[in-house]
Structure formats: C-alpha cells, structure tokens
View 1 (tube, one colour):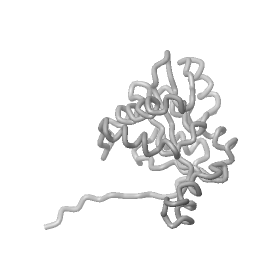
View 2 (tube, rainbow, N blue to C red; view 1 turned 90 degrees about the vertical axis):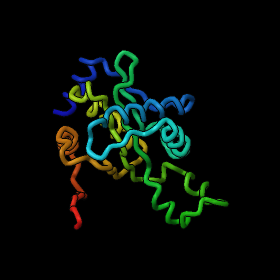
View 3 (tube, rainbow, N blue to C red; view 1 turned 30 degrees about the vertical axis):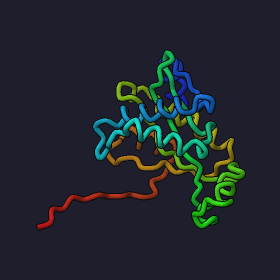
View 4 (tube, rainbow, N blue to C red; view 1 turned 120 degrees about the vertical axis):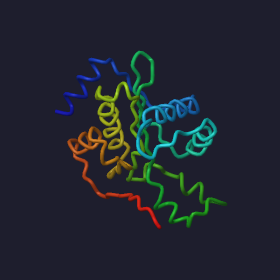
Length: 189
C-alpha cells in the first residue's frame, strides 16, 4: 500500500529527488535547514535556527554527512522537503575516548561503510505540502539507499507523540517504538 502511495505522489506531483551535492554543500545544507525552520513552525518546543547557527552547523557536519543518505524533494525546481541523517559514530567516539587529536579524527572517519547503524535525524516537509506524501517519498528513497550502503539498523530520532501522520507512516513501514520520553510541567512553590 505504501509503495502505491509513494509512486502515486511522485507521479501526481512530479516530485524530483536528489542527494546533497558536495560541490554546493553549503547551499544545500542552508536549503535543508531553511526547510527545517519552516516545516516545524508551530511545533511544541521548536526554536528556529539563526543564519549563524545554520552556517556553523553546516561547517560542523560537512565531514560527517554521507550524501547518499540524504535526500531533497523538489517540485518544479523548488525544494519542498528533505530527509537527513548521520551514521552512528558513537562506538568509534568511545573507542578513541572522545579524543580527536592527534589521530582520533582519522579513526573516526576511516571506512565509513564499516558503520552499520544510522540515525535519521529529520524528515522535514513544508507545511503546505505535508499531506502530499512527500515524507513517504523521501523515506522510500532513504531506506533502500541505507540498505545498499550496508546499514543494518536505523533509528528515527524523535517523533512527537501528536505527530500522527509521521508516526502512522513509520509504523506502517515496519518501524517499532523503542523509547518514549515525557516532559512534565510542575510548578514548585
């Protein structure tokens, strides 16, 4: 059923998909973070990133991002959605005891294909396109690409409990709820 929805959305809305392009990395990261800011307006706890934060984040992530494990959805050349994640570098960070110098950085980035776990950090779609199936189209590209890369396990970051559309899509695709985090407000005094 999901495959039909994905193909129908791609055909009906003429969605074009592409990965982040290393030659225009800064521009693509800026595009992604702009989508991130616009797509999460009105979401509980969300604070938009500033231009400075976007620039700093792009610089920090450049060596860690695997372009094949990212995706930008465009309609008529306009970016309307993106998915992005990172390989799970945590076991390697533990091995180098968090020390990047003098050789830790090389050990961290050596043989990225040896990392078998992936964390999908965000799938963001502009609000006016959120019910068009674009999120499913993005995930439909991401998951086969991750399998081809050699990923054996994926985590889908946090999905708000009241984000019924995303939760239902992930559950229909076979994702299992692993952790639930709760925040409570309690006035002291």
